Length: 181
Image (cartoon, rainbow, N blue to C red):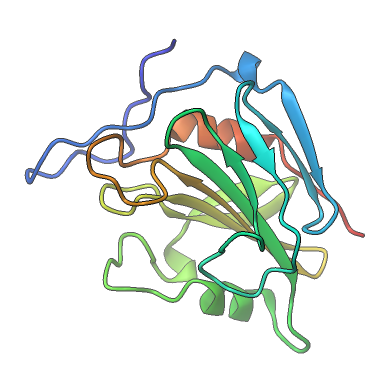
């Protein structure tokens, strides 16, 4: 197994934090197509994919309204999309979908997001920092808003890694193809 990727930011002085173990690019051997949320993705061997069965309307992303890729451990990757509401711009959707909370480093305003490209469409990254417990790619394309989220632990468990492996997140996001219909 590869060693964990270097964290994107220095750990805080309040405690020890780690990232989930890396998975090599060669192990992204499984493929999944979501007709409901209109994308395809490659994910690691040994992970389990569970398809969402209902349209996504809740920003908290509860099953069965999300596609979940579960690792054999605690880490998971969650994917959803929805049509932009009538009359909404991409910027409005981005601002509304993840309201900034008390942790500004986890939920910065869209203009302060680290950029990401998903299937040729520019978007932004939320989280990916200590205390956030998630790394999320947000992108609008083909009249839909998409969220792709890596979670080291969906229950905010401090006993293990608290940041989803950055290299694995980047690899999975790079494999995504957004489908128009």
